[in-house]
Amino acid sequence: MSLHIKHLNGDTTFLLTFSPTESRPSSNIYSRPPGTFSVLVDPWLSGPSSMWHPKFLLSKHTIPSCISNLSHIPEPNVVLISQDKPDHCHEPTLQQLDPSSALTNVLAVPGAAKKIRGMKHFDPSRVHALLAYSSKDTESVIRFYIPPLSPGGAAGEATIAYVPAKMDVSGLHNALGITYRPPTTAPFPSRYTPPSSASPYPNFSSPNPHSNPINMPPTPPDSPPQRPRSLASINHPSTISTASSSASQTMSHSTSATSATSGSQIAHHHFHHPSTSSCTTSNSQYIRPAKTLSVIYSPHGLAYSPHIQTYATTHLVPHAALPLTALIHGFDRVENPWYMGGNVNAGLPGGVEIAKNLMARCWIGAHDEDKENTGISVLKIKLRKFGIEEVRDLVRREWNGGGGGCEVRNLDCGEEMVLRS
Image (cartoon, rainbow, N blue to C red):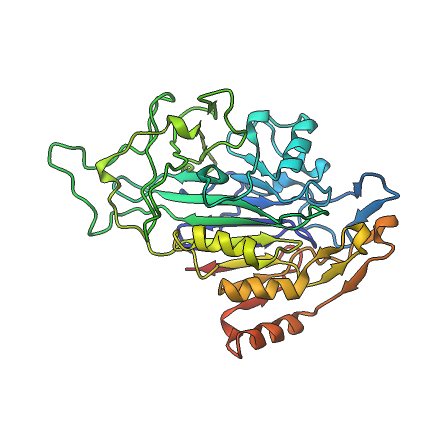
């Protein structure tokens, strides 16, 4: 399996493409290999970004984005928005997305979700506010069911979680965690064999939108028993079923495998409130792949302890998602006076702690573009820039000379890299 990371602008817009194979993502925007799962992060392609009023903050790119419109990339499964600030939640860029898409869902931090709904561009049922991650609340992790590549294969799963800082006056500091376990095409040798009278394959999809979905089998090592956000694939456009009026805005999501037929891209979703999910099958006793790809995206930084540490020990470890596949985190440190919110970007000092503790295979810089910033909010900014060699040197020292296992990269606009497992 593989993770392709492409930097779409000079700042912090990335396209993450997870695949069960090691092949390069198709250049045909209308074709997507089965089992692929893609995430577009914080899209801002062109035009100014103004917060509150241009006299307070006005930002402009100094490096042109590698694409002029989001129609030039394959339709993503998820658009992930980490901030409600306009350089992360950029209305003109978001309005380039197809509002009638049956594939794309927008997942955003609460403030950004409210802002995006107010744009009246997307179907409100496609915009979901992320809940703060809690190991005691299974609702705080959104799970995407990825059907097996062939009958008898293992289903895959992608998860997304939002880890915010506590008591953060600026509202800038958080991390978004993504994991991907690929579906497979062939059964594992030790998989459970049902009685001869039973169907040899579980029914992972149903043409009936009212049928109960199939609960996802656990990822090794087994997580403690819990009621997962069950997901099912159907042959109809997306709908959301709510069991009660008090249901959370953040719902479970299902992503079906897409057609590999040339010139076509078919994807359907069905969203279920967790309380409606109860169906299981005896064939869920497959032995699962031991590795899950994992990404932490934290453009402004977040303290490893206790925030990311809790997420790692209660989610990444049970999902066999360590070492971390990729950390996307800024290198430069940015400070404002305390009365203007204090720290803006944690930069190298904060990132190296996360990379070290999660044994990151790769650290990619983010949000370090030398933008054209004007306004009263930047008058007293203090910027400490760190070059790529400084980052690599500190990584080596923090790893006691063994930091060669963590590749440090600063992707140029339009540059991409692939991580294989």
